[in-house]
Image (cartoon, rainbow, N blue to C red; front, top):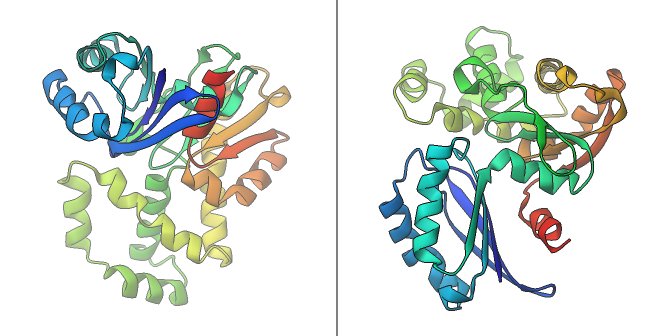
Length: 281
């Protein structure tokens, strides 16, 4: 049996493939090796995951774990050791969530794979492996097009008095905008990007407003220009997107791509179902 996982820092989606038409779904907390050591991860897997699978651990022959934070040999070793202890008969494969995104979006075909969720990232994929990756600089330096970056722009527009009065009134009523609270969340909390990304829900609810639509379009344009246009042969291969931000604002992304004469590929909100298809294939 194959066990497949797509793991962010908050949540992990699991699929146990017993057969082509027999798949068990499970969900746990996220397992980012930056926040878990091997022993803590192993204990959590035993208590949260195993009861949901309903099988003996020795029946699992392969584990494919695509996770946030799994981008270096040392980080991957933390995860590999935990899974080896929990599933002693299984071959363990650990890699970055960007490879999971590429496999989910492109399958075994060539394409550009982009993640637009809380953060943003991209890569070129040849149907087997990642061939190029423009550096993702995170919340402080980059993350163009992400939920965090969109939220950051929205908050700035509120305090810089750029936001139209009708939107500003609704925004303030919804979130009680207090600069001291925002400073605390951005400069003192562990996850400022997650705090900023929450505002994308408000953006989606008011996307019919020209101000809001232009803000999203400018941010998507910045992502395409800084990330996607840096890859070779980008005009001739599909540009694919994973994540809630791309999914809910896909009509705006299509407009941005068409203006740059780029080809839209797939847009999916979550990768786990497509990853099952990839591994079954």
